[in-house]
Length: 145
Image (tube, rainbow, N blue to C red; front, top):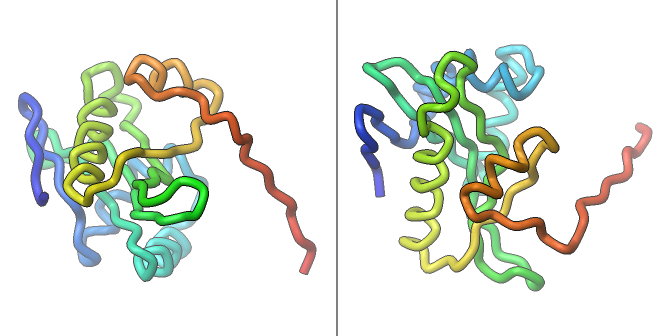
């Protein structure tokens, strides 16, 4: 699956030479300088991470980072690491279109679920899109060098 259209949006994967085009929008979600942004995407791409962008008349207004995952607990599933819509494009169905792209991609890979972590202020959006809270909380421990 390489392209999905919704009204006047074009949604497609970005190839490595195009990754930098996503920085302006992704910077609204992740506080990274440009070199670190590119380096992290490069590293993540080794394990299947892909950037997907929503274009409106040639301008990126939404970005999603996703990757296929297979675990003992969840089996094969798609994980959305990042999803952000430009502040000027919110409320126009861009986020929904990106999720629909991810869901179609997961189905095309014979996956039965999409997982993501959500900021508290984004939970109502995901719930409107039929995502439910997973019973296992995310945990982390920061390790000192």
